[in-house]
Image (cartoon, rainbow, N blue to C red; front, side):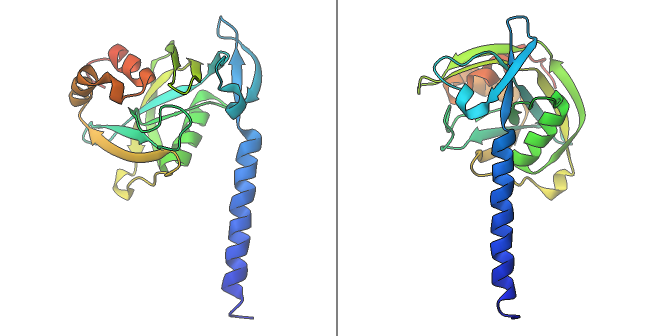
Length: 200
């Protein structure tokens, strides 16, 4: 019985992880918006992104460390859109009934395994529309936040299905890189960086 216990524990852990993934998929819906930015319904996140993606609500985050560097992440090659490009620290969609700040904290934990403090909205009215080479469009009202990483000494715990690489960089170096090679970055990050202040 004692020898079987670790096997049973692993089976139960896998089942729990599977159930949690199912719960996330069941809850994974985005808030649809009209042209004035008012919520008009919701839709499954994966299904809503297509060649005719309707306007929906999202968020972006630029995460700072104690040295004032900003975290940039590289999207996993398995991502359906813009795989392998560099982008801001974290992006996502609030679920129906979830505030932007709560959705951001949830998504940051899912993607990078960290928390955020000193959260502030730097670009409350940011919106964009962009098409990936796959033909899928993004069409988002996407307020942009800046915050500070909690307990940076513990390090990041990135979800490899979301993030393949990451780097803490100086803001002025980010601006230089985007000016020189905008194709290496997500289109929303390029537009946001143009609008964000010279110093975060």
